[in-house]
Length: 116
Image (cartoon, rainbow, N blue to C red; front, side, top):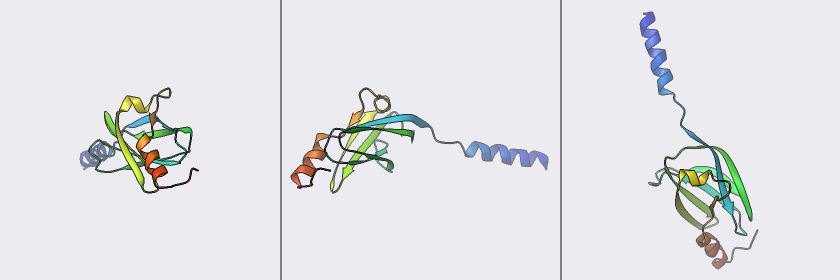
């Protein structure tokens, strides 16, 4: 009986392994618009919201769930969005952060969205 209980505890502990995390993710927003940032695997099955980046700022997000060696990063504001796929290491580079694509700012400007 005791052996069965120990086996159940060992199995349940093994099944509750926490997902890996990237300690820090840096996102630059050189635009005049705030951006909502989400990440996924390159296949883009499920999106995980990281948060918002204010205009003309760089945000640091802590403890992002690891999406694997390549990450899809989606930038959204109002009805405009675009996605870039980058290497995991680039996301952790404080000196050269992943930036909002010019296409998102262009879409917002063309739609007449006022700067924030």
